[in-house]
Picture: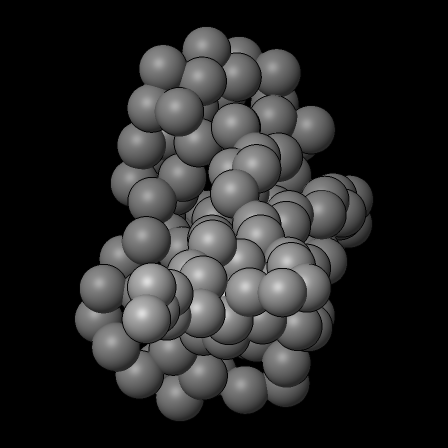
Length: 128
């Protein structure tokens, strides 16, 4: 029984995806996907690499995800699944690349600067 391991990241979230040949079970942090990701949009986004490559129900996924919020975790899971599919079968790479599912989203929260309220917002200026 060959399994594939891949890592996906988004913002501060990191997901370790273990892909095994199976029936389509999806476990995230020892919980079912419907329980862990209650919003339909999150589940659809996480499963997108499987939709694009027509691999629904062919694999079982065991995912360990940490950091960030649910949206960032969903993006991390998506990238992890896409990378695992490429590791498993190199023929999936052009399909996933065309759907831009193999690109790591580099956007991160900008740090707060001193002398300012937030990263870019300044304190109110008063002339008089």
